[in-house]
Length: 242
Ligand SMILES: [Zn+2]
Ligand SMILES: [Zn+2]
Image (cartoon, rainbow, N blue to C red):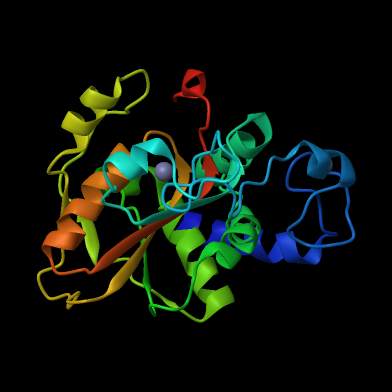
């Protein structure tokens, strides 16, 4: 209860105080934005890269990457606001562990334009296991999904997808190990009607996509027609795997 009040109070204070750069904290003119210095450092990904998976393309005239041509991925469209680096990482960390809840709106500001409304999608945050939720008090992806919902008018459904078991941190694991670790860790609410729907998964940081893929698998099994994914930051270089 107390932490809820503190969080609410913090959100109010964040509004009352002059807007600060989400990267370095310098006072800026615009809320939920960056100063000139940070702005020039941020690598915005947006609509660039492979039309399906969003990874940078080697051939500039191609629309799809070789991986997606060889085998269309389960997630039909993946978009991320920015590349994963010191700055984007620090924003994700400050939201997650520093309880800077206003940063959810900053992230959403850059993520919302990447959500396409055509298929009338439902926004689904990548869930935390309830043990982790109790520890942390909130799911950062849920906060971001709610802010995207506010900005787009789409619905965010936090209870649609659950994490049924706690999984260890994937840090340092190979892609195969990650896949194995998260397999079967998610379940769709049996009461949810997903038949023919488009789901946009919302996550803060996208690394290999193993977690999102495990989510997509159960969502498709439950009848979803199309799965997309939108994240704040994305690991582009494999050396950055976290
Ligand atoms: Zn700055
Ligand atoms: Zn691709």
